[in-house]
Image (cartoon, rainbow, N blue to C red; front, top):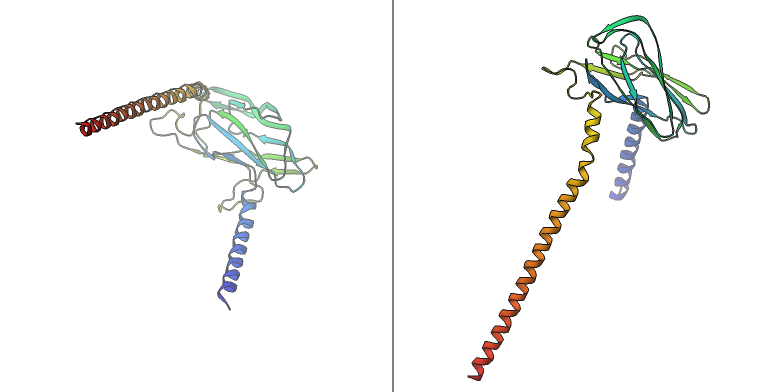
Length: 252
């Protein structure tokens, strides 16, 4: 077998193996998930429910996220998504739950986004700010229902398996970690209601910083040009002086 033929065969085998690997990996990733996947107990956090479209022809037209009733979240707010309508549903809890904010008898039970479209090959993220997260739980499940415009309904509601393997339709899971030592539950990885405005207030300052930097660059550039011109003038003066001296020497 010649070297080119052997090289082509090796390339074909490598490409096939790579395609097989990608083909096996995609289904495991193509499900509704929550990001970031962890947050601190007792704090507030902002998460995004990431919804991919798994169909070749139909588009996703509605997404319903159910919130935990055994660990209700007293404060829930949603970020508007262009092209989508959002409905936050509240309801009575099966039994009152005592939290640091008092006894909770009603809470958000479901958030529904509808009217938009996630086309094949695309995904959409739906952001939610929520808290305070429970301190006596290590995870929260958010069963999600995905509806396609062709009428198909997919329920992502399976709990994680004890052996660590992934179920067929896993529910989005937010894993809770102990608050950082000396923290108040609003440390890294969490966002209290006051955190977002701080980031917003800081953003307008960026253009002024950029303008100052550009102004400094223009000033230094102008100084360099002035020095260059002065050097050129001095050089010409020196040259003229030298020529005149040379002529005087010859005449003498």
